[in-house]
Image (cartoon, rainbow, N blue to C red; front, side):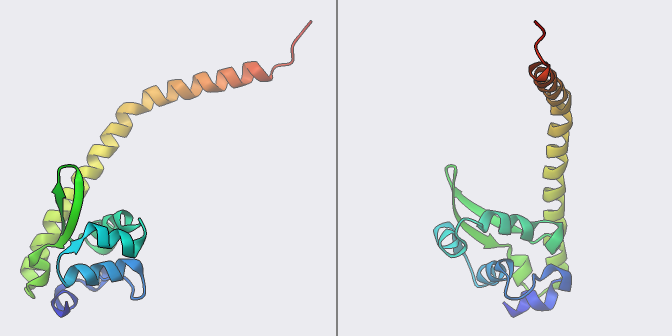
Length: 137
């Protein structure tokens, strides 16, 4: 646990007394079972993991262990625990590439869907304005 505090950028460490800090410390102590994370964080662990993996906390590389489609455990990449600044940075660089790639793909999906969403919205506005017109007898 002390190794991550020595090698991680200070901006990567969440504020103490936050759920993100507690999750990071649990991960630093070893494999965290998904069921235990659910019990501790009451369903907010996914958002916390995403925050730790993202830009806000300088891209912690957290591996999700799956059985089928179910998350069963989370593990902090060994390079963050190594006490070696270069290995820590290597893990962060990999995670940044993964995170920004996912972000790019979501942006592309959103851009692809934009014309359909605009058409649907315009149709809904038209229907709304037609329903609000006073009837003429």
